Image 1 (cartoon, rainbow, N blue to C red):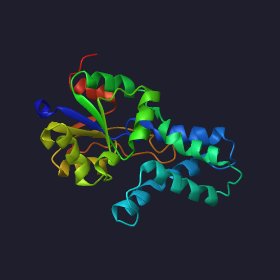
Image 2 (image 1 turned 135 degrees about the vertical axis):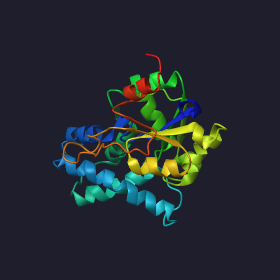
Image 3 (image 1 turned 30 degrees about the vertical axis):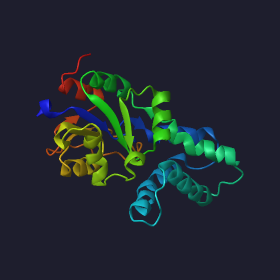
Image 4 (image 1 turned 60 degrees about the vertical axis):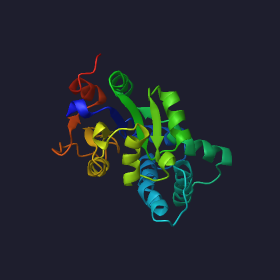
Length: 234
């Protein structure tokens, strides 16, 4: 089974980078006088409904940067935040370009890259993911995302699109993610799946369930653990 895998495709938000800790820290640094936990979670909670508006056809094709801005503008009204300049709002919106990696991410990805092609499979857009990778030192071989396929996960075209880009069969690709729903959708398209434990993705007040699911090909505590299981060199 391991011999079949040639490409590792990674979910990014929550799996590779700590969006909660990064966004909350920025909100607190701006002294907006709001509950930074509620603001951060509220911004993320708007993510899936916004993408659904695109997938349903209510909105035309819209980059995640622009969806984040729509959600942010609603949040600023909801939390009665006024007085920010356009420059400040734009800078805040691009916090998603500046997310910090989990402590194991760079080391684990570097080891996995020594044996496999590693790429993103994210709902983020190309500019966002490129800026993030440059800042955080994420060693991708290739950046694939919703913007490439003009579809948001869990549309099958995203998962199957990875196999098409690299001219391999779906069973030659493994999705690596910390979200069981994402992994389930990938399996339905014939991909292998690896679950990564990220119990603190949503912060200390909304802990993730990291229980193993036997349907996944691998279950790992970190990228370093996954590299160990896949016998990648140190």
